[in-house]
Length: 83
Image (cartoon, rainbow, N blue to C red; front, side, top):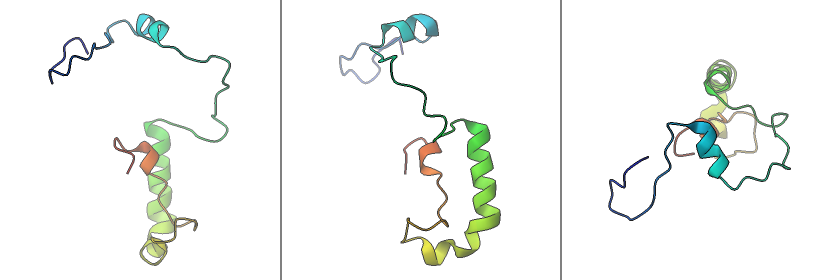
């Protein structure tokens, strides 16, 4: 983001050079990856969606108010808004 299109006075981050942009972030590099618990990306989201549609959708209506069941989609972490 090079400009402040909303007029909020927030300085943007130029993403043209990702290495430079990442170097500007205050990241804790001692934190290990969590890939053993969460796999991100479009391919994983599609895999989970297919699994939900084929294995869990038939039970979803009755178990929807009960997220502790295995019949939930687990798709919120892949959506833009997280809902």
